[in-house]
Length: 158
Image (cartoon, rainbow, N blue to C red):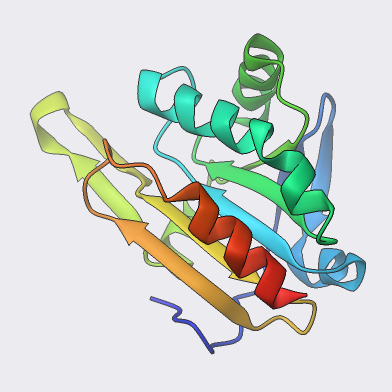
């Protein structure tokens, strides 16, 4: 798993932003730090709460020059519907190929439900040089990040 101090693995993936565009991490870093918030799946209660809470924190993240992206294995079309349903103002990255959850080592299974290869709930803050400055990963999908810790990490990444 990439750790604090490591260079973030670069990638290109579909971006659900109301349309479907392409997102390349290394290109977006020129705009400042960013936050990748991995979540198991759209339209689930805890994930909906987490993404809504991040949306509430969007001003604090943006005032520090950072950009927030949610990441899940859902298709970009499902993620656009999820954004619309929640009314969130940040973009979501589709990892339908499941390469990001492998590269960032945040893949998990819900064996009892027969659901495999979804994202663990995880947050990576990446500074404009591509260095991971904060990492938080939960093996329990019911546990959300400490949002103030994420905001503090964004402040420090600037």
